[in-house]
Image 1 (cartoon, rainbow, N blue to C red):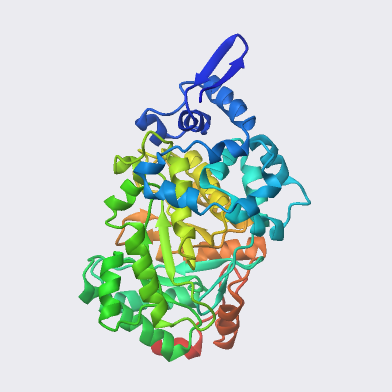
Image 2 (tube, rainbow, N blue to C red):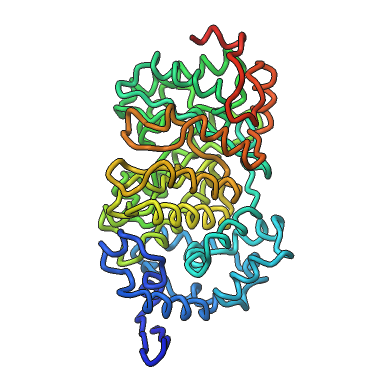
Length: 456
């Protein structure tokens, strides 16, 4: 089905849904690289106006990636909850935007709606929203998950403690972990990206982190972000695996490039559930995503990168994860060129993930060859904290010495908590107070806890 829109005397025609969505997307370098971006601001406005008039029900009949060719499309369509969708069935994309912004649309309403939303619907809606709209709606969403603590409550901001080390040295990882704990980080997860994806390294790191957790009774969870098959081998060997990690994407081809499919993820999910390591809940999966991965894998099917990103959230939602993280600026300027594009993409990803019912975090980050700096990250961090982001990263000095990119520091997380009146996960907050580390809302915590001296 073609879509047409006049701007003045010029008539713009968009031959199908994926073209309409792509042309309506706020400009980013990845879509230009893929050849799907609007050729002018006028064409973009024409597409946005046509999109605003599109009924939500159209997404039930036209897919951006063919059903028969893609298991992610089949997952999206086959799992759609028609009863949950019914209250908004009569709306257009523009009408849905207005409905989302209305005062009467509250957290409970959005939670009930989430199973009735398809990723393409929320991606389309984000394309006609300002940054303030994306923040306002996401702030209404409350998606709560549990393992050893409670993540995602309103008024809370969790931090992933990311103590990466270039040689996977357990002493270096332990030192960075101590640094983060003393600065109030770690309630989302203590998560290590291993420098080498082999089961022996994973076992060493998991064992050290679990002994640390048990020694100080820390109400959190650990994760080594190895490939899912490596983690499954570690579980077979009796490793103390709390969360199973995997990078995922919005098409079958992207996931194949990551070495996974839905069946493998389901197998890993079931294996982790059998361990029963969570004390408060059994949300055992941790997923990371990022705009641009589909184009890198030549698996985007001519769809814009933000819509493909939203489809990845359908994969995540299938497995009830504890955490989902958009690593928004990590892939590089080929996909998000500068700070402005990174900010917009981060707010879009967060909005889409939260609206689909996910515990959405964002790695507020950029690569050293992007046209971005830490001021840009401060702006995105502040916007996300206002939008109720579930968690952000805590990296020593904001500079990851293993992955070689720039993120947010432990102090940045404390700034966001202090400036926006946010607190850690409640169980972790109680632990911080019990250990005498200091006020969790201070921009710079006061003192070294005597109880943690033994970690040095």
